[in-house]
Image (cartoon, rainbow, N blue to C red; front, side, top):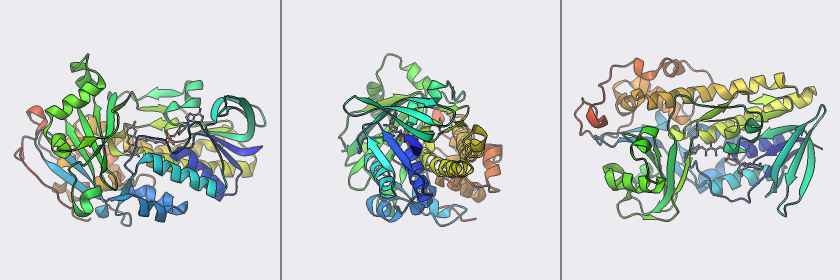
Amino acid sequence: MYEAIIAGGGPAGSTTASYLRLRGRHVLVLEREQFPRFHLGESMLPWSNDVYKELGIFDEIDRRYIHKPGARFIHEESGTQFTYYFDTAIEAGRPYAYQVPRADFDELLLRNSQRLGAEVRERHEVRKVTFLSDRVSVRVRDPEGVEYTVEAELFVDATGRDTFLANEYQLKEPDQEITTNVACFTHFENCVRQTGTDEGNFSLIMFEGGWWWFIPFRGNVTSVGVVFEKEYTLARRGRSPIELFEGAIAEQREIKKLLAGATRIREIGTTGNWSYRSRLYYGDRYLLVGDAAAFIDPLFSTGVLMALMGGKFAAQAIDEALAARDLSAPRFADYQRKALSGADLFKKLVHEFYGENLRRLLLASDENPALCAAITSMLAGDVYKRAMWQQLVKRGFSTLVDLPPLGPGGAPVSPPAKRSRTSRQVRV
Ligand SMILES: Cc1cc2nc3c(=O)[nH]c(=O)nc-3n(C[C@H](O)[C@H](O)[C@H](O)COP(=O)(O)OP(=O)(O)OC[C@H]3O[C@@H](n4cnc5c(N)ncnc54)[C@H](O)[C@@H]3O)c2cc1C
């Protein structure tokens, strides 16, 4: 009998397993796919670096992946640009993150959990979980289609957006404020990238009706995707997501510039309907971690950091509960509180973006150095410990500054529409 069985070997599952192994716990990871496997979510945040260090993989990650020193925001309608550099965040010491092909990155994390002693079974799918008074019984289907049962003290659901337990217990609640519902994505070769140390920057192009991501990997492959807001797709009813993707490239100046001469090397994928949260992240003998617990719109590349931190907090809670021989739900309340402390800040930021306020501020925050540093810290993922500057986020960044309204077509009325700026911020 295992101490913990973890369903899902993505970042949340492998990180939970690795931290549990560091605490000497007996762990089984059941993963439905054979790794490496493609996954969305390729841009990391600097605060994930702390987890890589604790798990002993920082040097390997630093060697494999391109550095991401900042996040550049581009306004399609006006051409305005602004780049937030992580080395100007309020807490120093994490000057860059990484852009990672997830097939490779997720496999690195999963193999590391094996190196630390976790048992990992790939192509083993969790089919059913039964909670008994003294243990958990997990029904699994192996690669040959044969079902068998394994048992543990406790079950961790890290099944990502499959949300195994949240579906079973009808715990999922959709985000009422975010109406975004379609993303299209692919990979290109030979895009027009920034040069020098800026090459690995994340670029986000905002346009009326959505936003693009542009994530350059080491070498010459770049991940390009677009998120369409509901109104945008409704106004183009009848078009397939692929037609929307190609139509948007043809119509828009900024993304066209980045794709000039580029060749698409993957099918165009689509996904949708994604912001939700489970009402509870735990119960008697179980926890939900990563996307299995909640998913926030991918706007600020926050998903993997939340999966890693969720895994870390979950492992701590599980270890303490096992030591106390008490795996009842109240033991895990603090786990949820910690996981939500970061998620709530990110959620607030995303809501402000879709409410338009933050879009203006993102392009003009250097007019207020303190705000600029606070936004940089948010974008770096500094959300899991209390800091004074976080009050700015909670109160709503844009209520604190006097910004020009967006003009027709989304262009700022003032300063003049054609403004090109890529500045480093003032350190506070
Ligand atoms: C459009 C889009 C863009 C995104 N961009 C970013 C980004 O740039 N940066 C970022 O950090 N995040 C991004 N994300 C979010 C990111 O992809 C997720 O937050 C992250 O992958 C969560 O990790 P996880 O381990 O919880 O889930 P996953 O990575 O999805 O892993 C879950 C695993 O569970 C397995 N599984 C599922 N069901 C079962 C079962 N029954 N039995 C066994 N195994 C099972 C799956 O095969 C999978 O391997 C994006 C998401 C979307 C939709």
